Length: 79
Image (tube, rainbow, N blue to C red):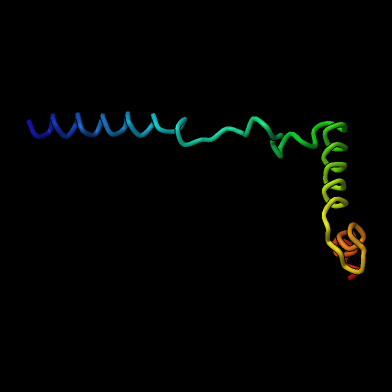
């Protein structure tokens, strides 16, 4: 009797462990492009780089009025 209960408990726990995977995995957000697919085509890569430059030019990082130049200088390790 004890062995039968142990087998049922073991079988139940094995079945329940496999059923939680779809609840744990989270899909990509619906309002953003996944990072794996952004550079697959030339159009999306260009749009991503243009968006990056647009964000950099619109931020108010004022290091002697440089703005975008400061970011590019930091990126190129000139500063």
